Amino acid sequence: MKVLLVEDERYLAEAVTRILEKNHFDTDLAIDGEEGFIAARSGIYDIILLDIMLPRRDGLAVLRELRAEGVATPVIMLTALGETDDLVKGLDCGADDYLPKPFRTEELMARMRAVLRRRGELLTDGVLSFGDIEYDPNTLILSRGARSFNLTKKEGNLLEYLMMNRGQALSPDAIIEKVWGWDSEAEDNHVQVYISFLRKKLAGLGADSYIKTIRGVGYVLVDGHAQETEE
Image (tube, rainbow, N blue to C red):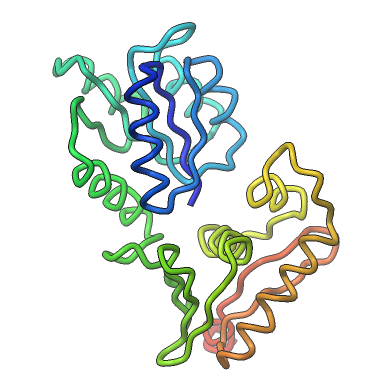
């Protein structure tokens, strides 16, 4: 799962980054509002942790413009202000939650899980679920009932991206940017190879869920059982 942290206090930013990566979140850091806005509008992040007091552009302005552009990525505001007016403004601008500084690791993780749970993307224990399959990003285990496979980190990142965007066809370019990184030299054939790896493991599990190719568009994770029921 990919997180954008927008925080200008270097010590805190480094500490939070370590916490997130220890909990298996792939984390990018932006140290001012302008940099954070440019990164956030890419749409490649699953959740954004956004400080209110930032240089170049404050967090409220960043959030307001992101929502105006239609960026729906969940946002948790980080604030040391502790003033009700600022918290209300953040929620009114489209924040999903807020977290006053200083905060404990357990509280940060709990709030992130709660926000993602409200979007229907996570089970209580942080396991992703789709159709008849489950994937645990912490252990890289893909399972269906009692059967399971260990995924590589890249396979896991790709499956997670497909599961988080259920029902939406993802282009090879979007997948490369999300899974390999915007500065990667990966090409479409890299995506095809890893899609093939995942398809074989899904088939090995006997899963109803499968990865469908939409010609000229990209790939989408499909719940085969749900499709049969609809038909």
